[in-house]
Length: 231
Image 1 (cartoon, rainbow, N blue to C red):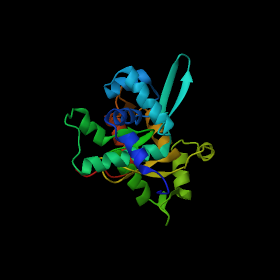
Image 2 (image 1 turned 60 degrees about the vertical axis):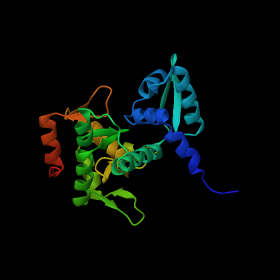
Image 3 (image 1 turned 90 degrees about the vertical axis):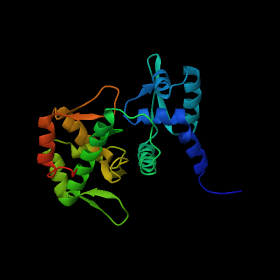
Image 4 (image 1 turned 90 degrees about the horizontal axis):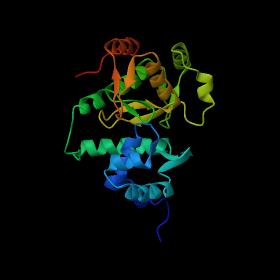
């Protein structure tokens, strides 16, 4: 009998096309009902409930009840990172969806990855913070905020003390599926994106993972994070 973690079970849970569509929808960071997830997956409500029961049992999603509805979210940050990595592998190996649309370039430019900024602008942010020594990666691969980095995020209006109390890493590296380079996740990554939204630099598009920056917001972003991404 083989020992150790059963990756085949996890892969099977994620690999079913309907369940994969549900999980991709949850990457937008919003809690969704079974009915909404059935629509995303293109299956009946009964079939969606069966899929969700399997995902719950496997620890891939979590559920909470509010009023008459039950809402589903991704299980934890590791699931988000795994899905983003799988998207990168699918992109690199040519396993893309047949139908593309006008949102595809926008998704590659700036999108939400659960609760932080991804795409070209997310990668630009992460790399700029590293170049300025505001973030450093230690020998174990962990991403850490330097003292100068702490001063930077505080000066940008973020409550670092509050973030340190959260039960999640301050900074975490997340492999970007479209850029194949890393963007910033963790409490700081989430707070930076929320601050940009609060400042009116960008907005979330309805029923989409796209983060739409205004012209003024994009200028402010690159003023803060130096160089524009290369074409």
